[in-house]
Amino acid sequence: MNWGSAAEFFAMGGYGFYVWGSFAVTAACLLAEPLLVRARQRRALEQVRAGTGGDAGRHAGGHETAA
Amino acid sequence: MSLYHYASPQHFYPLAGRMVPWFAWLAAVSAALGLWIGFFVAPTDAQQGEAYRIIFVHVPASWLSMFLYLVMAGWAGLGLVLNTRLSSMMAQALAPTGALFAFLSLWSGALWGRPTWGTYWVWDARLTSELVLFFLYLGYMALNAAIEDPRRADKASGLLALVGVVNVPIIYFSVQWWNTLHQGASVSLTRAPSMAAAMLAGMLAMAFAFWMYSFAVSLARVRAIILEREAHLDWARDLRGVKR
Image 1 (tube, each protein chain N blue to C red):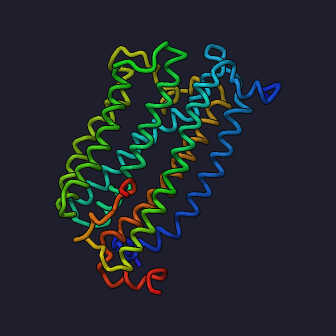
Image 2: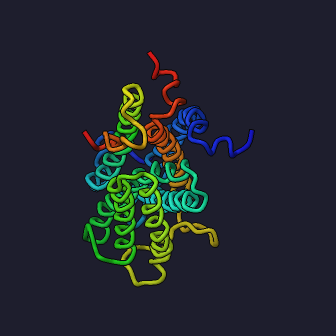
Image 3: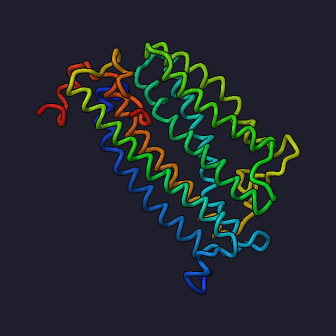
């Protein structure tokens, strides 16, 4: 075990900002991406239902970042 | 039933849907293992103290950013040669995830560079070529989005993806070819790893987790892409969850 206490763990030997900055942003991205993909999947199903999708209408909202 | 059966988007769609949860679980379990090893088993580094623990996201993210590019270009190339719809869709599904890992590689690298080199960024060969990789992903995605006709978009962006492949060996060998701040490879196939066994185990577990994550998320994304492009076809309209 490397850490005597929780405070020591979070301090990361004085490098907390750098270590947690790396891990937090990575975690946030890897949690956000599946949510964006799920939203895109829902939109795609919605397009199929509405009959607006397909190759002709691919710009009707096919991207995860698009509103 | 052959592989060709699944080369059709219609048949690949349900198969991908069945694979996603498996890869997602593998990713979650190996990430938990990797984080546990990385924070609680791997010892403090003699030179860098705790700052080195950034390695557990930095190296796997960097590997995946390069690996996914090769896979993406492979699918794009297959799409160009065989003119198969699904190949180009796979390439498109991989691009955002590859771009994300390239970004995370640069981000975690900057946060690692500051305490160890004294700077967040330096225009050195390794860092610059990784930045180029990030822009290649973005360029590929932008080109795809900019061309209205999807088959033409597949061709143009596929060509861009293939040309960009030249950058991957440049990234990989940059630390040998040029004088750079970035350290050499910690792990290589030709010699024993230059790090403690627990550090290596944590890094490999995290790399495996990111790899499985990439499978899961790009298979989920390719399903959305398939639907977007084939929404006008009967099979899509007959899907469960579409009919009410």
